[in-house]
Length: 288
Image (cartoon, rainbow, N blue to C red; front, top):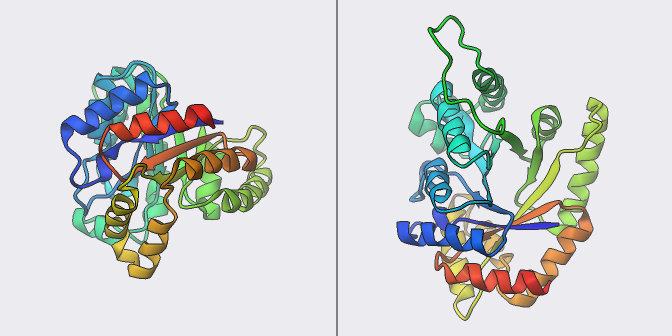
């Protein structure tokens, strides 16, 4: 199983220099992927902008939205161009993970329809794929640039619709908000769904899990995750914060359990923006 790491671009007090240095270290230390989360109505960096910054200081690591909430981005042509630009600038390293999203305020802020977000996502994927293939619907020329790798698509979510998207279009499926035991059950459901579709090659199976290491791990995990998930209420947000990995033993054991559950790649999302967290995680990964 590959092990990736998230950028700290979702943490509100992360500085630009921390995000860039984090990307550089993750690339040098052999992590498989840099992942980013997405929210609009929050104090985070835009995920595509963050990955563009990371592309400039990295050479080999995959750059992945895990995930991008595409349907609140109403202009599909602009999004297709942004995605293709990052993919080409990075030498084909982009993985575009998308989902329908679940926070109504993100859609309210952009004037897009929350209730039709799943159907909107399906239509967006079809349109972006056509744009990337060079179709231009009577325009003088195609919307460029031509992406270098496609790009590779992944889809997040646990509903049957989300899993079917991964089976239809996906290079990968992102099982977020789970656990090693939960992933085992989700994979059984996903495989049943893909079999119904006639999928013969399973999408790559990715999972994300939060972590913080060091003496102040508990404080960082609690502060970030209880704020980020405050819309779910203090009890549920506290449960998520409590599930973050906060010791080297927890990280090593969780890596082993995700691998045993059938995960192809685990991306560990930080709660502390200090780039030293990358070095601490690399040390544990090397020993796991």
